Length: 140
Image 1: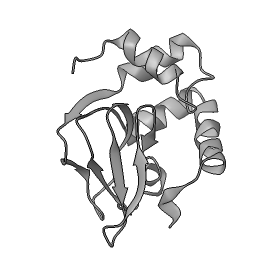
Image 2: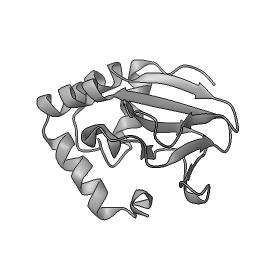
Image 3: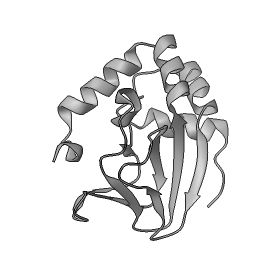
Image 4: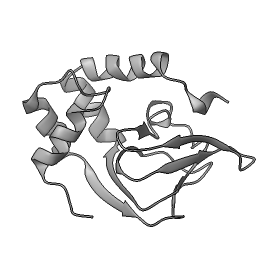
């Protein structure tokens, strides 16, 4: 896996439902705030009850979300966001995220997300829309 440059990150963001309506200048600003992370297969990204300081975008690979009983909730893949539901509530993680394959992620911290929303309120609207239009495995 290679590290993505700023332009690569911005074009990846443009392909997501959350950020596809934003112009390139704003996408570059958001991309600049995102950290690239790499995980091995079977590696944990976060556990249930862990503090939630970041949300994640899958660049490549697959991640499985598990409930408290260890049952799979969802299989997430390239272009999917996860971990965002705890970013505003400041609640601990309600599910675990485990890598099903080798995974490359872009991570966005809570403080960066809040500054992005202040700069561009349409990102907040996109987040709300994503909750209402997608099957939300986190509710189970």
